[in-house]
Image 1: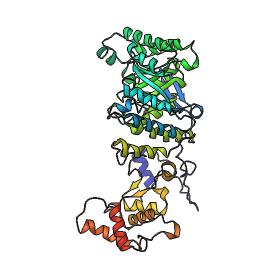
Image 2: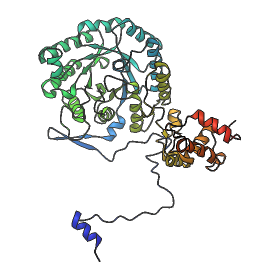
Image 3: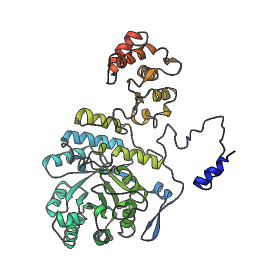
Image 4: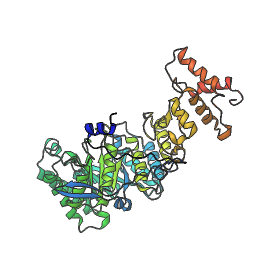
Length: 470
């Protein structure tokens, strides 16, 4: 007889010690992590280390829980650069919904606006008239003195200003030297400070910039200017991953490493966590994870847009950041998550924007299943195929789409959800078998290739199940 363990060791080296199966009377559903009534917690075993310049830096989970991490919004600035502009009324209504979503504690802390034309300024004035504390309205300008008059005229307390920092921008867009660019930026920063406006410097294209040759010298100048200022005027810095080159992986090098960029700004640039913000783009499908990584390593603010609309591939989706925040903190902190569904409906119905059907949290079908085996699981325990209680957090019950793959399980789930039947009242699979047969015939006999609409299901159910569908 061959010794199987000896053969395996010959191929793969020493095998691990065998682990015994643990028999249990009750299932272990890991409810400390996957409590269906809560957004699943993101927890960490211990501190995580990253090497920078030969030194180990750490991400401390305890620090993350105590820091004032929050969300900022650029729906009405970057969010308008990739779609038709919002009307004033749409801006006001979306801003009002943003405030309700944020809740009383300002998890969505600020929202920035263009200031370039009469419609922009009217939108700002109308939003200010609502009297919301959060999100605070801030402006956005180029780092030019001519633009700064716009901020002074409208009377905002804070403005973002474009301070492009890669040589791609400094040399090829601005046609300046590094010295000229930095001096021009600092002149506008000082002008803002002179009239009591807090500057927020947007380090455009930072993930493609010379960090030690330009970025850190400039940021250190900003830190020195801030030393004698009151807290409400101390300069903020936004790290702009303009082309989506940022990387969250441990060991990635500057300028693309998100952890290293955040570390450098804090420990060598002199900008503390509460004055540091991340702004990303989704060119490489990394926009959400890069923002979350910035939070982990010390950046307090992540800049987002509603539904991720933004220049080219978009910005971090605000609704994704909301659920990431809740997962990290383990608490909603007053966020009204059900507003997310109202906002998505507003985009579809009023803004007339395309919202992909399978987009997380907001898509029409984000919690819809088409597979019969999944429908069977949902009918037995919806926790099996639903991420959390989507009724509670989004006013969205899990749904089933009826196709040739749905089977009788899918029909039963649809009927019970539509009729609102619970427990013993629920229709059995045998009860809906005639409807399921009709659905199957649509595909097998009539060659249908599209899903069955709810209107069709209601009509056939009234005919075949008149006791329940009247």
